[in-house]
Image (tube, protein in one colour):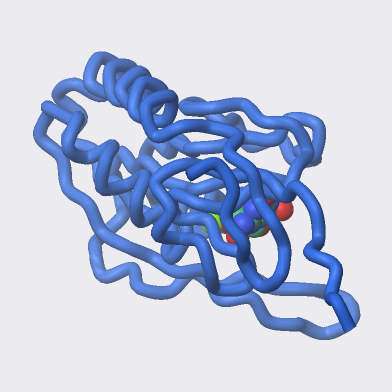
Length: 184
Ligand code: 5GP
Ligand code: MG
C-alpha cells in the first residue's frame, strides 16, 4: 500500500521498511564498535522512539542496558519559557555511558534539554542515536553522533512517529501528500 489516510490527510511512502532496516543496522554497527566495553545505558525517549529502539536493540551485540524515559513539556514562567522535564529515570546515571535514543531531531530543543539533564545527573559520556535528523531545522549544538536517516524539513509519520496519535504502527515512513477535500 503506497498511500495512507490519517485524520483526513493523505500520506505517501517516503522511506520503506527495508531502507529503515539497513539504516538501523548501520547505526548498530557503529555503536557496537564505538561502545564496546563501555556497557552503555540506552535511554529511549517515549513515545516516538519505541519501534526504532526495539529494532536497534536487537542488533546491539555488546553488553548494555535499556530503559525508557519521557519528556514532559510544560509552560514555565515568561522568563524560562517552555520547560521539558525528564521523567522515568530510575537508574543511577552517575559515571555511566548513556546513549539517548530518539525518533527524530528537528529543532533540537528536546534533545538539548534531555542532554543537559543527563549531564547534571553526572553521566560520564552521552551520545545521541536518532532515527531521523532534520539538519535544516536544527538550531542547537548538541552533537548528534548517530543518525540513521537524514531527512528534509517535511512532516513525517510512521515507524513510531504519529500524526495526532495516529500512524505510529506503520512499518514504513510516510510524508504528507495532500489534504482530502470534503465533499459537502
Ligand atoms: P525538536 O525538539 O527537535 O524540535 O522536536 C522533536 C519532537 O518534535 C520529536 O520528538 C517529535 O515528537 C516532533 N517532531 C518533529 N518533527 C516531526 C515530524 O516530521 N513528524 C512527527 N510526527 N513528529 C515530529
Ligand atoms: Mg521524540
